[in-house]
Length: 162
Image (cartoon, rainbow, N blue to C red):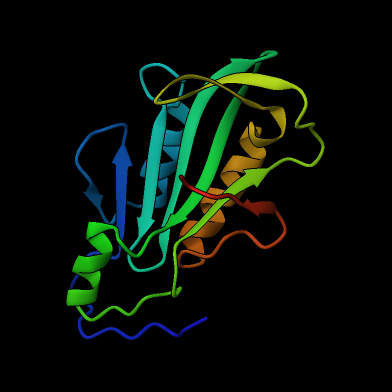
């Protein structure tokens, strides 16, 4: 993995997107956590947290399943993304030499059973990628407090985007 080099420290390092609203620059943890708490799979069903030049973690859902909220959490790093091109112009080097896509997996659940969760619209997903609050909040908090790093003890699997 490459070390990051910055030409300027005056730019925003974090961006938060709530549903399809405009980005909020440099959000604090309280704002992020409050948004995650409010996720309900209807009014609020998508939170995106981007660490410039290091990718973004996207949380979908908040729907109830068996009386508990469930979430789909994935990580994106795409070289062709417009914001990454802007970051390159600012002198922030690429983290990876190619696109990376990971999703958070709960190994205690099966891929054979399915859940309904909101990902743009109500979608059927394997149960093992519909994670509980504890897994989701650990992943997001670690990503935020460790400069865009994925939580090392949670289970992430790479998936292909078509």
